[in-house]
Structures are given as structure tokens and as C-alpha cells.
Image 1 (cartoon, rainbow, N blue to C red):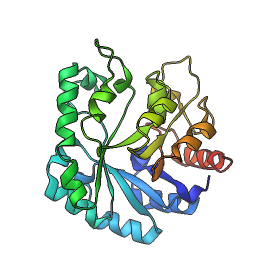
Image 2: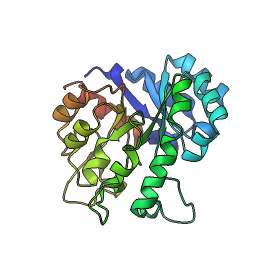
Image 3: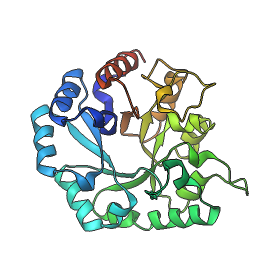
Image 4: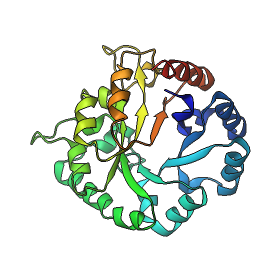
Length: 257
């Protein structure tokens, strides 16, 4: 895999700001595309300058559902940075609770959110953009009916796209190959997230490793993802001790595939 085909979710580097030297390091490492988060909160001119200075594109961004509903402003921001894919990273957060509790929803609520999100697909498509959803592990916990939340999310609109986080799917005890096949026409992006030891609690961020240092079978998964319309293969670590080491090791491994 060519390192120029690998993207970086900027969330990985958020604790190492300022972003100017981060953009420079990523570009010098061979990464030519990043994925943003919190598009609604950034300084557009500053990011556009860093993109131009480092020959870096931004094909996708994580954007909260609340920001997605502000269609005019979000579409304006996406077009300014030439972003194609709007990816909702999770269900709406209840900021007075821990993150995992946001996903403690019944089937009706999962379906309602899936329908709400799907209702915005057309307006983004009308502007030449795509709208999709990024999974965590929690969407693979069966509901009492046996249905999975990810199905409640994705099955209301055939044009709602998906960014399949392969690592979080594994952490949710799902077989990513099954979901690559099921949503093969929806996948526009994937997250590459690896873990050291499958017997540990994979929700703990210190269990995340550089890609290739863990137990996930990346050659098989990437081979299957490449059969889909996936446009971005995104490195992500939720809390690396050293983002440069994480990036370098992951890229060196991916080049061997």
C-alpha cells in the first residue's frame, strides 16, 4: 500500500498542537490527505493555509449531527476546504454523561436517529457531497430483538454512506469482513485502528497499537475494502503517547501490504 494513499484522522494528533508542525510532519512522512474533526469549530483560513503550504488535501471530515443539520454553514465550510465526505462520528453526545452511555439507546431511538440522519442525505448530494456515519464498537451490540444498532442506522436510505471503523468493529466483537460485504456499496472510507491483545478490554485507549503491531489481519481486510468504493484509508489512534512514532510505524507496515 502506497503511503500517499493513507490518510490521518487529525484527532490522533489533537494533544500535540499547534497543527502547523503536525501538518509539516505528516506531509514529509508521505501523507497527502487528512481527515478533520469538529469542522464547525476550526478557523477555515488557517487550515486552508496549512493545506496549501504542505500540499495536503482534506477529503473527509467528522462533523457532529448538530452541525450537519446546519446545512448551509456546513456545506459552505466543506466547499471552502474542498471536502467531499461529511461523516457523522457518533450518535449525538449527552455531555453530562460518559461517552459510552450515549449509545445506550433502545431500538426505536436508534431507528429514529437513523431516519433523522438519512433525511439530510439528499441536500448534501444535491451539493455534490456525501453524508455518512462512522461506527464505534457499541453499534454492534445486539438489541433485544436481535437486530444491531448499526443496521438501524444504515438501512433507512440506500445513499447514506459509511465510514467503517474496522478496529472498533473488532472491539464490538463483529467480523469486519461481514460488514464490508453487507455495506460494500456504502463504504466511502475506513478507519485503520489496531490493538495489541484481543484478550484485553479493547475500549481502553492504551490497548491501541500502531497498525501492524496488533492482532488484526490487515492484508485481508484492506484487500476486501479495496473492492468497495472506499476513497479514504484513515489512520486513527485515540490517545497515542507519540503520534510521530505511531504514524511512522503504521506507514512502514502498510507499505508492506
